[in-house]
Amino acid sequence: MNERLRHIALTVEQVTGGYGWLLFESAGKRLVVLERAKQPYRTYLRALQAGYEALALLSACGLHERGIGHEPATREAEAARELVELD
Image (cartoon, rainbow, N blue to C red; front, side):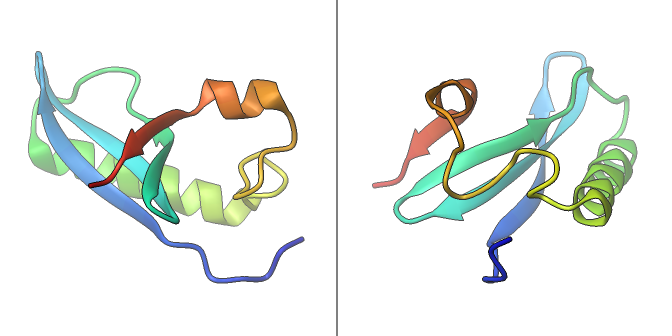
């Protein structure tokens, strides 16, 4: 398992029907979406709490064991991730 420091952030965004959380990782000059809320939350605080729980679970379970790594194991894993190019 790679022991390097990972740059993972939690953010909350306004979506149709409320607010959603988003976990993403900075990887070079791009952002890789790791996970996002499956449904909207009525308040910003509820979305933030749910996102924090997802981040804590991600840390507790280990990123490697969940198949989320900086270097994707397969092309399918790479294709499954959303990429956002930074300017």
